[in-house]
Image (cartoon, rainbow, N blue to C red; front, side, top):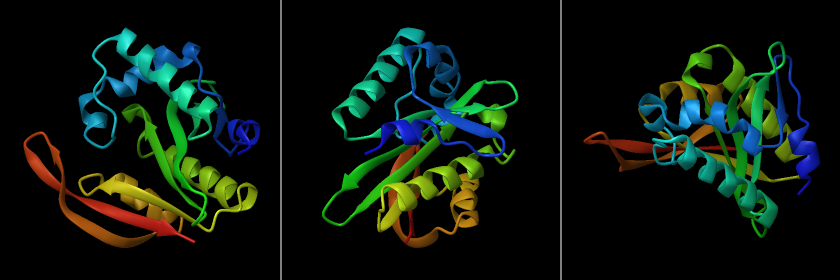
Length: 177
């Protein structure tokens, strides 16, 4: 996997860079936000130390070659607003899972869509993957829209797969070839 290329992806409004300990404060904004937490697989980070340990784990996973992570930054301000990832690589089937999380202050501004476009382009063009898939909590309508806008198709639904804040939610399974 070409980490260097993944970390240097650039769109019209955003660019990727390696996740570093220096990003901890910016990452803490969304890892400690209860509304954002509803939609991601990470546990809620209550302290900056928990987020620092989380960032260290992201770095370890990437160094081990099992994940690709990038901090998403806005070009005009160089502010880190989120994290993009490719993970669950299946070398035999030649596919991987895409993930992304953004600070909610940057939702509905096109940054998520640009992130998915960048990661998808990299996965297909540079890694030559056959397929990319995503798992989305059914309540996360914005994320489902982002995937659909980028050519992902709803392939399946796992009923009552997630239990969040006392309620069950389906897992929407998206894929792109």
